[in-house]
Length: 220
Image (cartoon, rainbow, N blue to C red; front, side, top):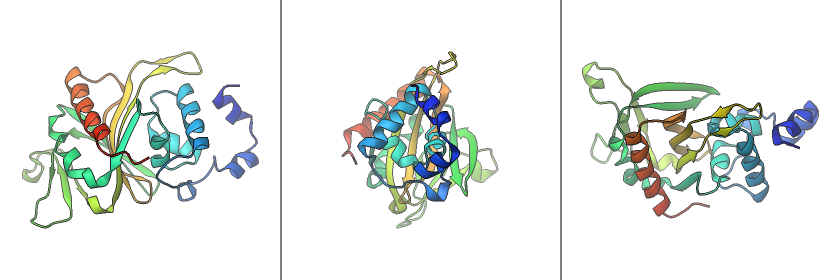
């Protein structure tokens, strides 16, 4: 029986008992997925390809970090946030506009802006700014303060599209660099594509970042 059909056939009471209707504060937290969680997540993506991990998190009652750690290495690679500077140094190689996706208090905020480098703006400052060029001079864009020592992991996800249960096809893929806090929730996701093709230049730049992360020590 298809995975989503199995879900819909369960009673609400049973779903609540398994944690599939868990609220955000009740998510099954942790850094690395168990064998059972890997099977659950991979069955989900087989039927709902290219789904953003934030969506999968809510539907399965698993933390977003567990969701991405459950994927095969062809779809997700991760390393310790100790490598923040190494990874963020490549951000400025991604051309054009990306989606910054931020979740707080179960509210998701999306900002569409050019990718930027990470700047440690003050000597010995533990905060890094992800800042769009020209913002401080009144131009459009964003500024995000990240504290690497408060982060747990960094993942590059590369989720291909495919056929949906209704027969429609998601043509494009979802490609993102995700920074996770020690609570297993994403501090920020930098989406190069979100169920879309993207330009060859942006995809090539993402692939370079993914290859770097894959070359670093694996968390799980």
